[in-house]
Amino acid sequence: MRHRVSGRKFGLPSDQRKALLKGLVRALFINDKITTTETRAKDVRPIAEKLITMAKRDDIHARRMVRTYIDSNIPEFGVNAATRKVARNPHYVVPRLFSVIAERYKDRPGGYCRITKIGARRGDGAPMAVLELIESGEIAVEQKTDAAPVETRRRGLFGRRK
Picture 1 (cartoon, rainbow, N blue to C red):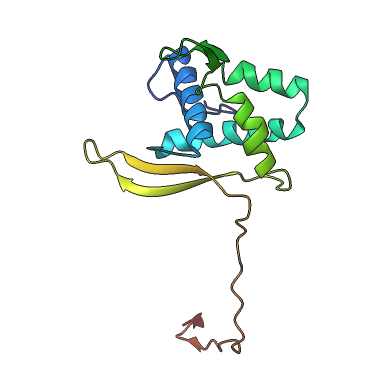
Picture 2 (cartoon, rainbow, N blue to C red):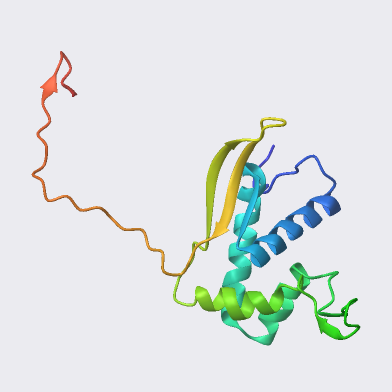
């Protein structure tokens, strides 16, 4: 029975599955948009949204909690091979998450990611999707119609609507 079991296995051992999800979350925060399969996108979205919500708190405990999930094996600083100087690692995501992404959503209560289905992959037919971070200014606009309500007639023996 699958009672209260969440997440998908993706046919991977648990350590590889966790590494896959961490890599996808990291790529989402670096690029603001990733193209992946629908099932992977559905598993990455709640993780990313929880991390953004945690980053909005902007305290030391939140930084430590985010860092334990995202950048467990990536150092913050490294030696640049060309200049031989110590520089910030471009793949270290925590400062970008706290300074750019969390600031973008400081007034938004949730729903930071969007999944858009884009069709099947050419090679194996896997359903693909684009997972992207929503811009802070985007708000769903309801369309208002000033027209009079349309009359519905009942028809048929049992009064089905047209």
